[in-house]
Image (cartoon, rainbow, N blue to C red; front, side, top):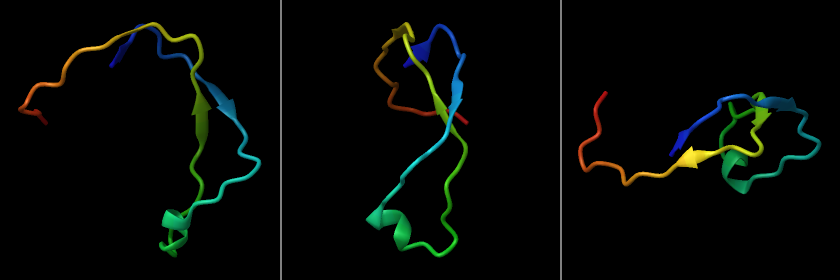
Amino acid sequence: MQPFDLRADSVELVDLSSAFLEGFSSAHEADSLLMTDVGVTWRRASAELSD
């Protein structure tokens, strides 16, 4: 996915529950961003990923 515009708004998480994350004692919420009305071009990923 290649978005045409990388603007995002900060959002506040009101409730977050994850059985997966509860298994990690060091896991914590990260800053959250929301992108809306994003035009994108979808392409098939190549078999080889570069660094």
